[in-house]
Length: 263
Image (tube, rainbow, N blue to C red; front, side, top):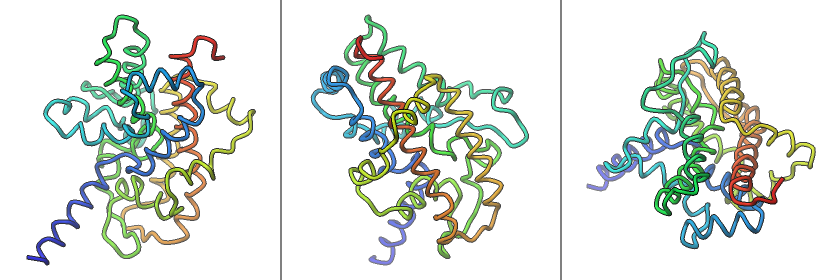
């Protein structure tokens, strides 16, 4: 019985790692960075919509919700797949939606004065999560291999897949920090750097950036790659950069939505 339980637990952890964008830690980091950059007016508006709970509290909600019957229609909204050899703009979009169209849709709901509180609650929960997803490189991975889920690699001698290790494993191996420690250590952009990061509010601009990083990762992580310390060291700066970008851009969107005096 104990052996069966351990095998079952291992299987669930493997499935979870391959299904969630950035993993729980990455989404918490993105949301907490955003929370630190909200204006008081915007933070109060978010708190009001979410019934007093913070955006960090809801940062991972969408990953669980999309596996329920009520919200299964959002499954494809966590990513956008673009196959190798195609430009970002020319590859057909998923008719069920993708992460860039979903971000635009949630923003529109929150910006609509006629939206109900319930509609705004759902839109805010989703928006917080999708700003993390769009900055995770494998969420701009290839359709042909399911965003790297079919690319088998060795992660410290463990059989894994490329998508799964980028969701959680590489992040946790980069720094064994709490989400508050992540924010404290990487949220140190200068005013000029922050201005450059938030210069565009177009999700497709962010998607194109992430697609470039995904292409580089694919080239440097072919099928069968044995991943160890050198790989983590190489990609840690990108992980830090993407988590910071996601957080700052999320805060910028929320400030624009809820604080009329924000510039």
